[in-house]
Length: 379
Image (cartoon, rainbow, N blue to C red):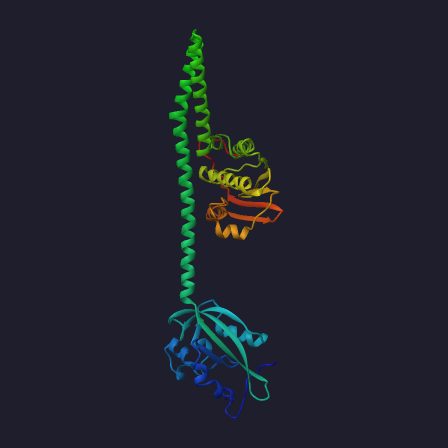
């Protein structure tokens, strides 16, 4: 269908009979603002909802260029451009336009605009365009507010994780200094007394007491490792992950291989703790849910990013449901991990299929100045 303007004895502004049909109660029954424009994008019809929106009368709108009634904000396409595209392509189009009502400098609104071709004349060789408007200004403002809240929550999640990590490290240091060292001193003195005692029953009592203290020392070390990971700050990420792999194998029978590309990966202490905790949590998910005894961790540097992947050949799971529900009872915690890394400028993704295993990957930003204080740069 070709669209062209009509010229009658009244010139280009001649109104086809269809206008009389659309005018009046038909358009006015529609609750949304509606405009009808000709191929020159001049307003031919407008309903009462449009007049109420623009605080205008029929004389103010009819015959006016569409760009004068709904003026696009600077540098953005407006309804007039949408009409021209509709006429050019002969397609029904839709889009969002930010406009000033009644001319530049006036009230600014955002509309969802839908266009429809309207054949007119006899034979049907002319067309106008009907525009249906929906004011989405408040909805978009609410969406922007929600986005701002989400970003604030992301930053808060990172801050909470950072504070938790620091507190854990502080508690671990206290346990080591105040309890671990005292128990070690007690064990040394018991050993001296046991060796110096000549009475058999004394030696037996001291042996049992010595083993009890030794057991307490082992438990204290395990507690320190659970609260924090001293090897992480002392030797680096790879050594800490290999230590974690040994613990997971001894406790759960999970065989974890750790592959590192050998490139330097300087991370701040806070980010180092976050990376380690996230890998630990994802490996515990393998233990709890994957029904496999194997997992693989890969570390590599790509420019200014640390790339980490954790994969397993297990039963898999529904990623979308896990990301949406993030049920802490099941222990997935994928949503929290993603939010923390996204807030830091990184990323997180999970790929899993039933019976095909799972691969979780995340990136963390690397900055050369972020070398952990008091420790060698983690590899």
